[in-house]
Image (tube, rainbow, N blue to C red; front, side):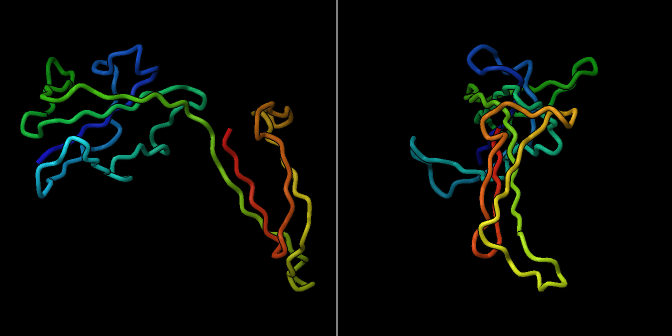
Length: 163
């Protein structure tokens, strides 16, 4: 079998060696191929090896590098030295990609008449939004922070943020 180890560190991949700064954000991904893989084979762990952003608490606007390395599961283990946990590794070099954390969210809404009027959908209603700073009054100046849309025939609208 083979395995991959995934790590993350703060900073740009091309300027930093990840070995001393990396955080393992997910379990190692192990797999067993039925036949020998070719050089251009792709191993896709899907969301099995994804970063859980609810626990990571990454800072918006900061850049992090995500790294992967192939490891030999038989020679890849935690080693405790003087109370510190480090890794003894028989692995490939890490391949890293930098990613700047942006804020993403979406809102799906529905505009209708009041329930006592039948909750009927209302077409062509203008819906406008503006994101505010933490103080709750100062508008943010960024692409996508202010916009508008109109409801469709079913009274629905969608707002997508990626700022």
